[in-house]
Amino acid sequence: MFNTIEIDRNNLTIMGVKFSDLKTLESTANALGSNMFEGFKPTPKGIEIIRDYVTGKITLTELVSLAKQKSYV
Image (cartoon, rainbow, N blue to C red):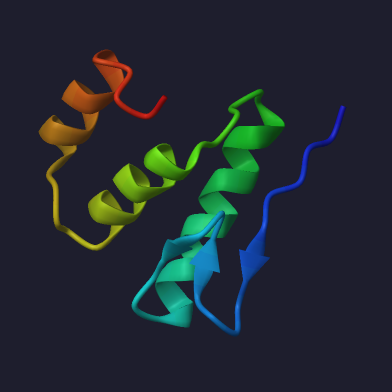
């Protein structure tokens, strides 16, 4: 089954999570789409974590730690 998520390119948001620019929003949306195809169900918190990793706010080690803790739920 195919699920959709709310992407607002005018306001630069995905599921209400704000992005600083269109390029980051689109690269994050593409990554989400690929993972959703494999069964990933995004949450706003998960999108924040991915955004923070893509923008360099958190490291790969921190991303892995947050994933292990299931902080994205």
